[in-house]
Length: 214
Image 1 (cartoon, one colour):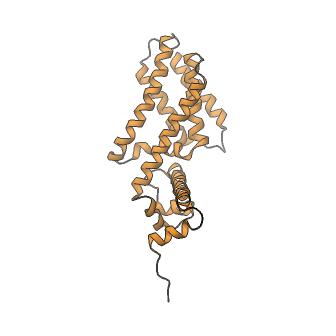
Image 2 (tube, one colour):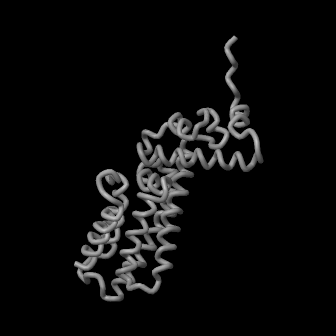
Image 3 (cartoon, helix red, strand yellow):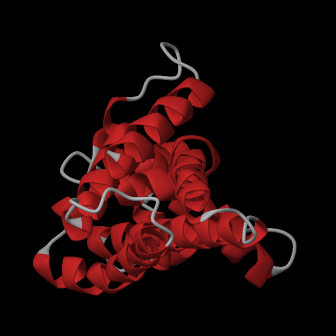
């Protein structure tokens, strides 16, 4: 006789068998989120399939629904984590360079964003690539964190303006959007097999600072 299909509860038990139940469950959930981040980073929102996520996470696809109610809930959490990691990393780097000139702090922020999105975090890269394609109700919630990050950059540029380090003829609001747009696009085209991370960072810093200084 063919074996009966396992229920979601049974699948979950097989995934998390042994050891502390809560700890096992947390590790499995984290593994699913990491797998989803990889799929989103590589394929984008429209092509993110739960079967691919399950394959990378090394669990059976039905077990995903024990941890997340839907594909959208899983994707939203990945993006939320990613946005927070970008903000936290850039903030931490800027705090370490608090004594630098304002224009140098902008250069630090460029480096920090590219480090976290291209090297340190699949979640951060997935968030950058996915945020503009989310359904309206999810997108509205993500905009809160996105505006928080935009405000960080507004303050960076405002400090450089006050220090006389930015072209006075520049519309700083548009300049900020140009700079962030360019940085956010890098995960879409950068290939580590073609160019080094340091090379991309150096070019991005030169591009942004030259544009702001005029």
